[in-house]
Image (cartoon, rainbow, N blue to C red; front, top):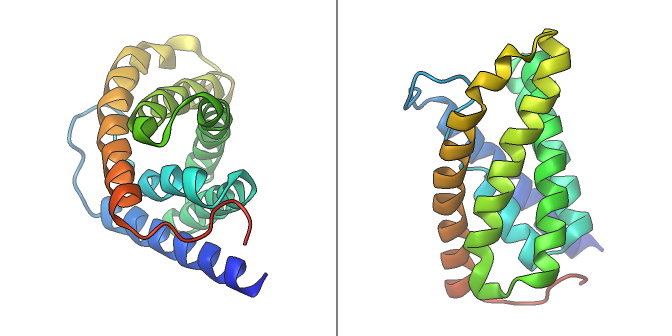
Length: 167
C-alpha cells in the first residue's frame, strides 16, 4: 500500500510540474482552451500502467491542485468536466485497445475532454455561443492528444514495466 501511494504521489507531482511548466508557455493559438495538455501524458500512462482507480485519484487531485494554483474557479469547473469525460472515454477504450494503440486512446480522450469542457461551459456562461469554439477545440484536441499519446506510448515502451494494476 505504501509503495502504491508513493508511486501515485510521484505521478501527481510529475503531472503538476508539467502543468506548471505548460502554464509558462504562451498560447499557441488565440482560441480559448487550446493548450498542449502535457500533464495528460501522466494520465494516459497511468491509465495503462497503474490502473483506473489510481488514475482517477491522480487526475482529480491534479485538477483540484492545478486550479488552486491557477486561482480560477471557472478553470476548475471546466477542467473537472473535461477530465471526467476524458477519464470515462479512456476507461472504455482501455478495454478494447492494445498497449500499442495508446496514442489512439489519448487522441480520442482529448477530443472527449474538449467536448466535456464545452458542454460544461454552455450552462456556466449561460450561452450556447461558446460552442462556436468546439471545431477548433476538437481539432486541437486531436493534435495535442496524438502528441501526448505518443509521448505516453514511448514511456510505456521504454520504461521498465514493473507491476501493473495492483501492487
